[in-house]
Amino acid sequence: MNGQGFTVTGVSKTYGGAGEVRALDGIDLTVGEGEFVVLLGRSGCGKSTLLEIMAGLQRPTTGTVRLGGREITEPDERIGVVFQDPSLYPWRTVGRNVELGLELAGLPKGRRRAVAQEHLELVGLPDAGNKYPRQLSGGMRQRVGIARALATRPDVLLMDEPFGAVDHLTRLQLQQDLLRLWAEDTRTVVFVTHDVAEAIVLADRIVLLAPGPGRIARTWDVPRPRPRTLGEPGLTALREEIYAQLEDTGTREKEGQPR
Ligand code: ADP
Ligand code: MG
Image (cartoon, rainbow, N blue to C red):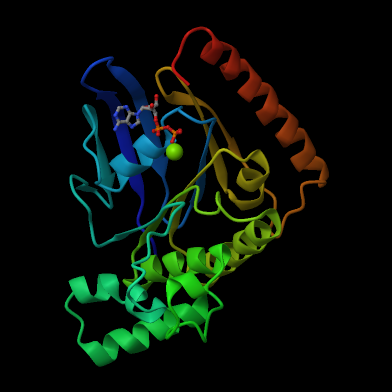
């Protein structure tokens, strides 16, 4: 299946209420069909806000988001979302958790079962269907979240620090698994992280956000073939550049911007 491209135009977001927060300002971003883009930045720079706006879970204060030319104003069946916490229902089996989106889509029971099982196999959990979430490790639960997002066959996957809560080795494994899934069935991916190494390993393109208000500080293409190792000559230099830029934006952060 082919993905679809995103166009983010002039997006800003101000959270109202006491002590207004300008979370985003003037975001312009194009994500090509099938492209793997990583939004990188330190905590509080507006990554989640941008991703939620792209997912139709939040409305921007100004600006628009289009997917395949159609404006996104609410959750869309073409978009799958994965968060750091997969929020599985503890009273449902793993299989029935994966079936969730398929239920909403009105698929008949037998078909739901088959599609859920197929996607559990895809994420490396062929025997988990009849278990309960509490019986799985954190990394396995995150795989279930990915299976659930993929089961409805979205064109686009939006992922917000999906591997942020698992241990380091599991995280490396999940990164490779995600790249395998993406290579097998290329779809557009927008992946949020604050981890520079993760960004370099995964991305076609890295978009660095700076805080106060959240804006795009810089972007880099990562033209190296995958799998990548951080020790590769081109990537070591890239990493240093990104850290230098992060330090720059960090100074501004200290100059009185919230977090
Ligand atoms: P990130 O994901 O990069 O850590 P967020 O998008 O979560 O950043 O937050 C960006 C800014 O907006 C932060 O200053 C945060 O405190 C603020 N913010 C996020 N969500 C809300 C909200 N619902 N209400 C008010 N402020 C918010
Ligand atoms: Mg966030």
